[in-house]
Length: 217
Length: 208
Image (cartoon, rainbow over all chains, first blue to last red; front, side):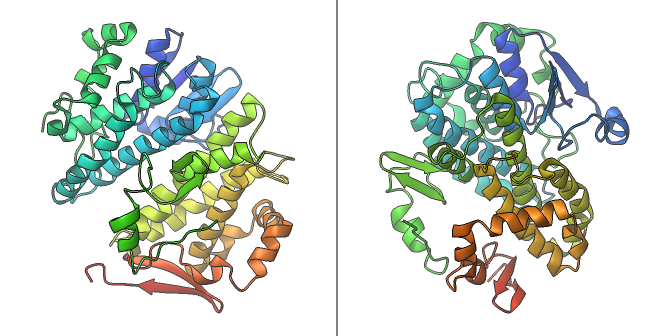
């Protein structure tokens, strides 16, 4: 299995975390800014993708793009998919977290970021409250079983935390994030010297707000 | 049952209903079906797909379907809507008009002969694709790019969807939303309108 994306957290990091947690063999194909001509020039339109884009996943014959399609495919493959009774709630949370992430991108890539961030952060009171209520005591987003949506939720919450640390002092979300960080493979990863959270930006390094490593603004 | 909220009198939604319907993530659109209370467009479509037997059956089909679903939704939200609500719309629309041929060709290639996006069986994703293609078509036509919609794989696909019996009846009825509703929020910076006499553009001062 090969996952390919830029050398930043962005949309692919949740998938990387899910793969690390699973213990499955996979290749983390990372493209730096220097690789951009290679991606756009050689790779993008010559690899047989229906909808060429990043991130992409190649698993045998299957070539998938689109973050959520990849996350859901891996969820089904790696036994991290909701039971039937939880599917609808899972998809609603998945979409809600994606919405929040898109909202963050919308301001982060806007030259007017400094003027826009206040309004966005204000709305987080309500939006994060909804997520906290949904998760409750957990332990995972849907209850007892960890699923692909936990990795999307955890990672995107961490992006929001970099923007607004005040919203992440205590409460169900903070406790939830600690539990995900304590998953054995993830704990090992986060504690390691190589952990890319030390070097990767949250958005593109060229964004108005890249979300620097260990950003606390 | 269809409930619509008026944009001009949006206090009904924001003031009363939004936080009092028992929705986990209050938003529009919402769907209430017995005990099930759903928001998020994609979650609603997938739920109805499963309920109404319009859902892919095999793993391979599901993975491909979800990729198509996400790609087409990207075109709508990250491209069309992103620029429609941006005060720099005039500059950005040209860039989108440039990239559309490639993106639409990918969709045409995927659909191929069809008859439906996933082959023989109609699925929830067909309704997403049809509607979004129609919105993009209005955009392309509004800016004199009918060539974006010259690929017969796309035009024939859209015709097949429009000829589904219940939809054909709906599209021909005087109440059809496409005759009355704009694609985007008409009170924001730019929206495409459609009247019975053809495409009309509505511009409102964003600061009003």
